[in-house]
Amino acid sequence: MALYNPMTEKLGLAASRTSSAGTEVYVQLAPGESCILETNDAALTGPAYAYLKATGASQPVQGTWDVSFVSGGPELPAKAQVKDLSSWTSWNGEAVKNFSGTATYAISFAKPQGTGEGFMLDLGRVAESARVQLNGQELGTLVGPTYQVFVPKEKMQATNKLVVTVSNSMANRIIHMDRNKVPYKNAYNINMSSKLKENRGADGLFTAEKWTPKESGLLGPVTLTPTTTNGQQGKASPGL
Image (spheres, rainbow, N blue to C red):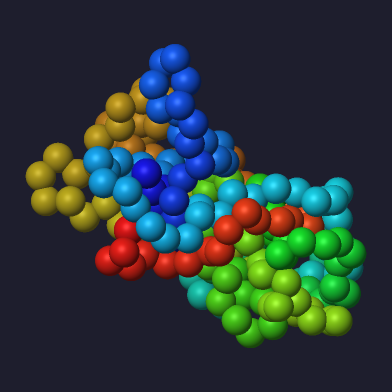
């Protein structure tokens, strides 16, 4: 039997055993994650699926994050430096509370301690999606609910630069537009009706003017955990 993770393109032969109930397959999934299990009457050949196992304690990525807002609106907030990660809507100024779009978080850190094939990078909480780069190399785009990516040890240097590009939802900009009567509801027929009474304006249509800003950005904590695998990580191929 073979396992395939469509989000990461990780695949390989699954670990299995026979019991009185039949064949049992070991599936390793983060909360909210899914995978494809392929069964076959014929024997399959190929690398073993790379199950991950921590070989040490998680280590926090510490230091100062340089935050730059790169696209979105209604206006780009000013650059910021933060040591403690939190929703950018909790920072000073109205621009961050109204902003929907994309920001980059950059930090430099020393190579963490630990043995194994690499490290599990865990971004903690993210609102809403994250693109991860390490030392200029793409590690992946994460959409949750778990924001983790495996970093092979050869990608780690003595000093490393981590860049996390985060995009939030449109909710905060919609709040700003509704409060400032900026037209955007341009549907042809019934326009935007509201299912919930509390989201209904004087005209009977949807409004977000009573909402509070939604959490946005990289919330953390960001950690690295030394990790080992039992197989070779790979991408999809006709062999499986």
